[in-house]
Amino acid sequence: MIAVAHPRNEPELDWWDAGGSPGDRALIQICRELSRWIQQQLGVETQRLPYSVEGGGVYLKDAAVLAGLGCIGRNNLLVTPEFGPRVRLRAMLLEADLAPTGPIDFDPCRDCEGYCRDACPQHAFGEAVLSPVGTGMSTLPARDGHFARARCLVQMDQDVQDSGVQAGASAASAALDMEGMPPIDERVHYCRRCELACPVGS
Image (cartoon, rainbow, N blue to C red; front, side, top):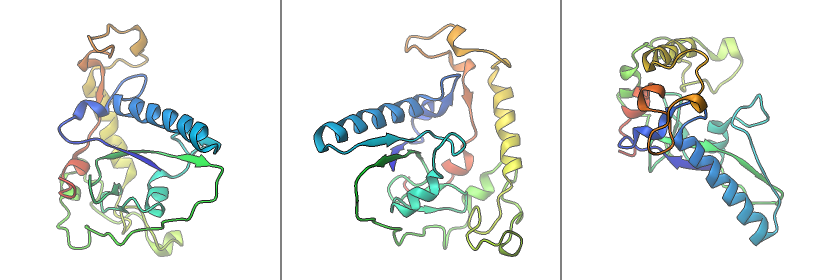
């Protein structure tokens, strides 16, 4: 697992255009260079995994927990000891036998007042939508099944509308600013309120 911090004082790392976000592009570059280094220096073959499970990737948050990077928080995000939920993830496979680290004993949400849930503009954490009985799972999204993904998606759609990005607009055809990125008003600033409200790693 590879994690890169997306601190609250660098919001532009998460501003999305047709090519992803600057933070995502940096993470892809880190994975590419790390893969090359591992293969050249250690002689171990690697396979960089795509982000989406549908494209051949893995469930990144779950894999990160198993790798000992943190826990799943009440905001349904990976929460790490050092950076809280303000990280982005990628995965890479190595053709080598490595000793697993396993999950760590870390649970900052146990006694938390739920700042992340209160911050959601769509009230996505307002009620239990999943239960162990209904799903047959003991581990539920957002720890207790209080996560309505559809409400979160409503906010994401609203963020796209608010960005001014036209449907079907291509960042490649847009005028670029001095850093080679589409102008700020042509990038989507997705909601991060549940993430930024978390006091862990602040």
